[in-house]
Length: 173
Image 1: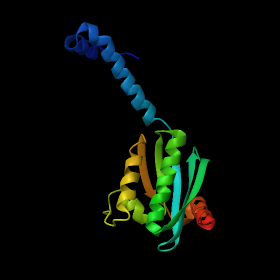
Image 2 (image 1 turned 30 degrees about the horizontal axis):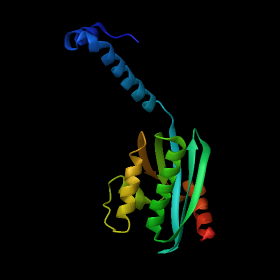
Image 3 (image 1 turned 180 degrees about the horizontal axis):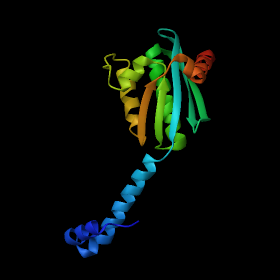
Image 4 (image 1 turned 30 degrees about the vertical axis):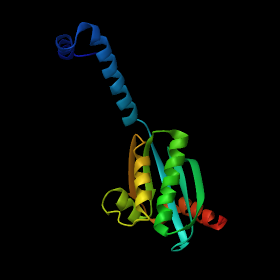
């Protein structure tokens, strides 16, 4: 890596001689980390939650893809919950499992719940007292990823997660 003459002159003028190498090393390390994050592959997670009754027996499921290949899937029974609670709980499950297995990756999440997607994007306010703590927790978890994006998909594009959510509801604890 070549450092321009202009930058070398600025370093020599502004930074004491004893600190110059440390400054350059830190700048290079920072840019390498940024480059690695910007050029890493994006994981895609599809998640879905549901309840039979509202509230009723609830469950959620997810499928995580890397380079188009399924690398992780999971589901969980949530007990008696509303549909919106189940959607948030499925998102929380997917995020926790992804972070546990792969760390602070770039993550693009897909859900067929327009309600959750719009709340997560800040397009809808979170007013419901039963949803607010889940929203806050999920928002906090998303901050652990090097990047997080969420998008709405049609139900037909979310079949694995839907199947996993239904299997979880079938397990009914």
